[in-house]
Amino acid sequence: MKIVFMGTPQFAAFTLQALINSNHQVVAVVTVPDKPAGRGLKPRMSDVKLLALENNIPILQPEKLKNEEFLQTLQSYNADLFVVVAFRMLPKEVWSMPPKGTINIHASLLPQYRGAAPINWAIINGEKTTGVTLFFINELIDCGKIITFKEVPILPNYNAGILHDILMKEGAELLIKTLPDIELNKVECISQESFTISNEQLKPAPKINPEICKINWSLKIEQIHNLIRGLSPYPAAFTKLHNKKTGKEIHFKILSSEIIDGKHASSPGTILSDNKSYLYITADGGLLQVNECQPEGKKRMNIKDFLNGFKGIEDWVGIY
Image (cartoon, rainbow, N blue to C red; front, top):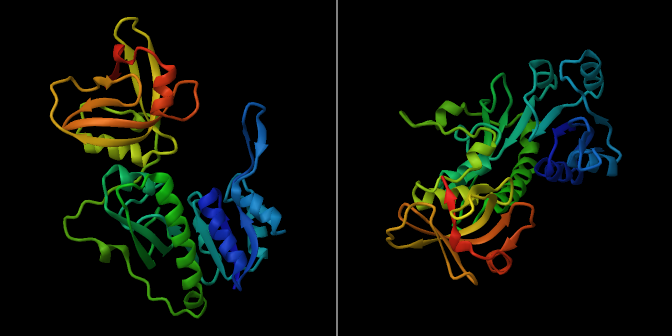
């Protein structure tokens, strides 16, 4: 089949590489315009654009997806199918264009976790299972008919970065496996309502913002640990550490943690440490052992290195 691919980040680029390696023809790529980044504000290309350049694939970077010139150029490729991975919402003028439709790979088991950050929210909410879903795009975000899906367990040691890489590979494999049936019109689609149990609450996956990343030490210890896992390695959960003597505050990211069971009488956010090898912060139901952190203005480091260069940790407390 002749395919136009639409996507932006690494998750999408991995799928694009799988398509390039297949017996289908990627006739064009649609991705975001280059954006200024870094201290020099030099234009930075998306991962999908970089891969398309390496493989001499025509690239379209429209500011507006309803632009008439863009639509005419897109139509000129006469693609059989559009494949979308981690891209913005498409207007009907785009997704209805190819004769075999426009399909999307979503990193959750739809209809659960519709939205921009399904990988993060599945871990934040303590799910034990997630997956990837292949579906046809329609007018609503992540609501089209399901073609197929693959379940993936979320193990206790997984963070968002680990799960991202697993789902990235599973999604690409599922797409390549399913394309022959799409080409031969053999797929039997199922509406998402068929996957919804009566009175089941659908959990959304909105974009992650700084307020979501802030740790509330009065919450259950499991909730805090899952928040840290679900936001690691990026953008990372954080707390404000407050010095009880000087009043100084610092921004403190926590990238890896463990739950230490046990009762304690300390107020939430109390720091317990030997100033050498461990740092615990108290919460409802136990202690959180901080394994990796990133203090303000510093690089990511293990807790021993942090304590080695940060004296008087017992004078600080986590704000909530």
